[in-house]
Length: 417
Image (cartoon, rainbow, N blue to C red; front, top):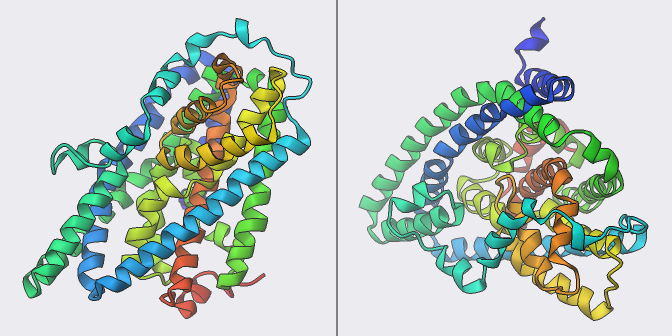
């Protein structure tokens, strides 16, 4: 019975019961959506202050601003390289396997009502509006708007300002560091409700969308999961080897967080816990505070794979041929649009709609073909994004020679297979 005290086991039971309820009693499962949404909202309630306090205190303790700039540049370079890998892999797999071939869907008669909202949101995401949205309307607005990049921007300005204040700034930074411990303590209380949140979210997913949609579009879902798994094991596995750890041991180390992500379909539901575990693995607080929150908008490996793979599926399903030039355009546009997706459920589908607009030969109405299974793929996107951001944090700390390898080896066992 001692196993039942483990959060890992409790979340696993919650997921299993959610699937069972959603399958046997779809209407009941559909009505349990508030349980999952409520848990995610509780986590998001403290995410912004945790990120703000962590980033600010990290900058005030860093001392040399050139070092901070160096870490920031390395972070962006790593994100761009790995994200491009993910986009290209999705494009390659979609071309070779062709999950949409033979689907023969008539997009002109597809039910576009289900995607209308996503299309409107995607149309509003221009480069100009994206950059403007990085700036909060007010200081407190960054904490209430739900955009992590706004919080990071505000934290950077605050951290640099405190750094200019000298000893007074250090004292204020130390105060924020102590305040962050309060929010982490709140997270430890909230996360105990993860099994209930996972139960409600999974019951809703199965009850509302039904397993029938999985059977109908099983090829696309299966190929996406397979591609994501291979990306994690091969691409991120190679990164792990370079850094000095096993990707399998790392996944085992964050297994509780991954189960919460699986249940809630949102990588943002474990952001504070992931930051805490990265520090326990020997990554300095300033690196964690910069890399993890930024990665939730700039390092979305699962979303990148999904975008290119899903667009090729829609092209094949609607018998829309794509030239090499169009595929190249698709890749370039996806590099930009994927940077606007966050860890919230549904953001990946909005990003897909925004990218699809760059290839007008594919009917926008064809998005209705996959809206029914997007929720199932959202779980895989969130899982891949979470693992990718954890690996990125360790990789950048290693690259900057800031990783405590002894601590990492102790936490992960031997760090090797």
